[in-house]
Image (cartoon, rainbow, N blue to C red; front, side):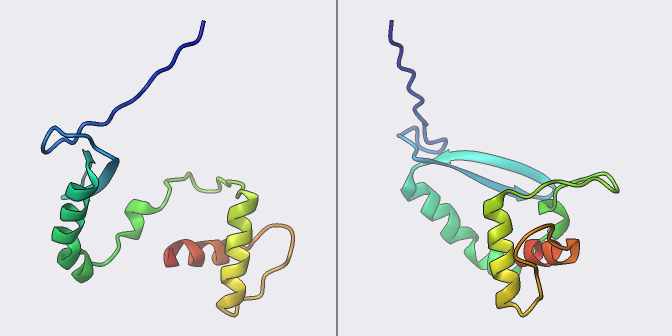
Length: 110
């Protein structure tokens, strides 16, 4: 027996069909809202002046880890970090572990 499950997003503003889930945060609380492309564009356009004048909160986007905990990078992410580091003039090996300082600088820049 075949089964097909279909998930349909409903725009949380107007009840129409949504095409994406938009995440945002304000006053220490994070939110998600399902929106159509039109409503998502409106949200981004209305927030644009505030985003342009704001600074990025690196503590909120950085993963919370225990001291001394390590996490292996995917091959794709490692390749991206190595390419970025070379463009920035940092010395980085072609293989092996990437220095923590390089990874932190990459994450701060992205």
